[in-house]
Image 1 (cartoon, rainbow, N blue to C red):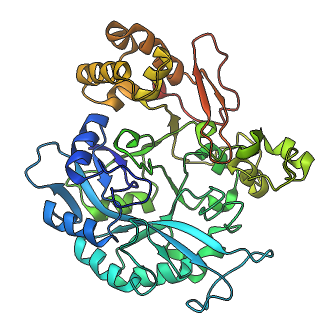
Image 2 (cartoon, rainbow, N blue to C red; image 1 turned 45 degrees about the vertical axis):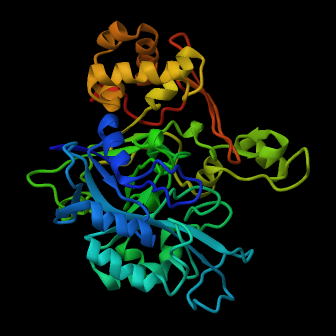
Length: 427
């Protein structure tokens, strides 16, 4: 059976997250999106874990909301930040780059069941206050985190979140490493995946040969209900859905495809300096030696720059057997562009509801719905969706925390540098 999975997002207990992110709302929103499997997020937070235990039920590592008929299935997941330095009194395994920067890395953890998650929480509480934030900051190295997690239960599945972001990405330009192995040290053999993040897609990652061994996962990292499903993984699972089957499929890279943000839309794609409204590709920032031409401070080097630094293959390279991907734009953003309104406008929400009602879910509209039928419901949105499916999209790239700006129109030339990504029509 085919499943669309969004493994990594947050609850209301994480910083800068909507108070609408509760299990009942997530359960309904996920069905509307067309996502079948989601992570709970934030299982390290005591109050959220209490809700998970009270409101979810299940077995074999797959849970459902009690009394719900949506069909949504939950995995027990969390995101944690490890923050460590060479002089840390907590860790003796910290690894530094030559500049001595503190390493701040975000990780996604999937637990095989609630009991294992609770046991891990007891261990992690020694390294930070788990009740302060749904994504806790832990004074430990990435290697220590992995060692403890796998020591609690060998079924734990751990991988770096949004691997390329300047801050908190395992390969980021500011606090990251040059390889996954450098970060996780002797525990790297237990890492089977990395998360692409919103500012990168598989085509960019394929240029770095040392990442070929990892499955490439995409998730929304949503901080609000509408953002759920903006990135996702599609996989086929035979027979009964279990945690072991899901993690096994990831380890063996038996994924059907991933659904990706256009990386230019991500807020760390280009190099730049937000305060000075300076944005540029790596070829330009290199001319300035990474210094902002306005204020003379360091530019934030984006994901594209970091990929260029680590790449040992030409743009357009596609490894043998690589899992295909498609770029998509969330339906509310497409409609907002058509109507020239904000995504929260009542006009946009009404148009969104009309299309989702007609086709059953957002992903049915974006990925599967016949364009002519979509046009019958909303002609302009149908035209825009066809443009997105055919990669006729123009985006002013995001930089230094500023999201990219999208333009969708049939007359726009096809997006350059497709780098081997598939069109939705290929499926």
